Amino acid sequence: MLTNTDKRNALWNSISFISISLLGFLNFSLNYNSFSSNDFGLFILLNAVFGIGNTLDFGFGISTVKYISEARKKVDYLSLNKIFVSFFWSFFTFAIVIVLVFGIYYMLFFRYSEIILKNDISSVNIIFFLLSVSFFFRYLNIFLGKVYEGYAEFVLYSKINLFTSMSGTLFMIIIFILKLHIKYLAVAYLTSGIISFSVLFFIALKRLEALSFNLKYFSFTTIKKYAVYSVNIQISFFVSSFIDPVVKFLIGRYFNLSFVTYYESAKKIIDLTNGLIYSAQKGLFNKLSEFNAISRLSEFINSEIFVYSKMSNYYSILLYGLLNPLLCIFIYIWFRSYETLIIFLIFLLPYSLINFAGCLYSVLMVEGKGIKLLLFQTINLIFISALLFASIKIFNNYLGILGFYLATIITTIILFYFLIKYNGFEYKPFLDKVAFRDLIKLNVLIISELILMFLFKDSYIYILITYFILFSAFFYKYIIYFYKNVITKARNILSYI
Image (cartoon, rainbow, N blue to C red):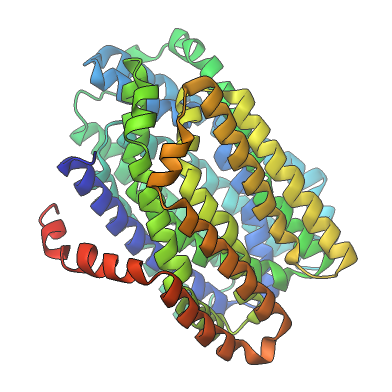
């Protein structure tokens, strides 16, 4: 069950995520209103290329959390520092190589694509260069973040992220007020990345127990020892990283760059809402690593992990059900785009399942089952790409994003199969405890809402009012639950801060 420390970590993770997401949403909104949809869509597309690079850590990111957690559990500070120093220089090397590879690809191929040639090539070149250098620092920041997670220092990490995010927002406000060229947005990304790296690095050395950056701890043996686990995980991450840029490229290629902006606008909202439950459960991976280290992983899966899935389902019912119509109205008013609203509704379907099964997916990452993870992500990529492409060619619209939903259903079933076969997962008691039937009701309601909203655009306000009543009727017991167990206990929760 959740301890007081778990609750405090979850609370601070949630506070941090909400604050950073709201700042990020403010930044995005300022950018949205500072630049044309075409220019901003181009910037998003260029930045999406580096999204692939963020996952190219050869698995050392997730390994950092796993092995630092285990080393601290065993009070083995020698191994801990070997992992820290060796993995840092691995990340440093990876960052340089990735930047060079992307630079070569851009110079030889990407800048000659039809999308790029429609724009001012000199400005595009400057933006790409600045984003490349920015990526170098942000890539190292990913590693440092994993170090804090391995230490379970979620409160400290949350406070640092809040500070650095506020500095980034300051840059966006300056750009908005002065109406600067979009290349200054890339300058802001670079400056923010450098500030984040400096703060994360020096506070880690000062505050994290027994941590040292002495080169004597660098060890090729350590890198080699964990390489198999790392590479297995990396393969699946690498495949999954193509999903977002592939979708954006197809939308930009067959519609226009404005639709990339609509897509990213909807994704910002879903990332904000969906990411809250993820941030609240960051400590789960540490727990899984610790139970795996003492060979009690199956016991934890069957006795405790349901708590995290139940928490996720309750959260999805609140955000994607009870508050669904209000979010839709906000999106339509804020972005003034009906396309963004429809894409948001599409996103709700797969992400409700991702929330539900995310804790189970973490089990495979702890075990290092790279082939299984690769299978999941390959299926995702194939279905999303194929169905989006088919939708564009046949129906001439963006409903192909529904392929993400179908892929998520399939991979969730496969995930259950592997856990049942290899971990003795007792899925029937698990489903009974996590309100799975209500999750199905939620998905059915969202699908019907999506169909009506897509077909009857002029009547959208009446549809949303109707679904506000329907969601309230179907999930009335959750309204009572949140009132009694969240609002009335807020004072007790705040005592953990």
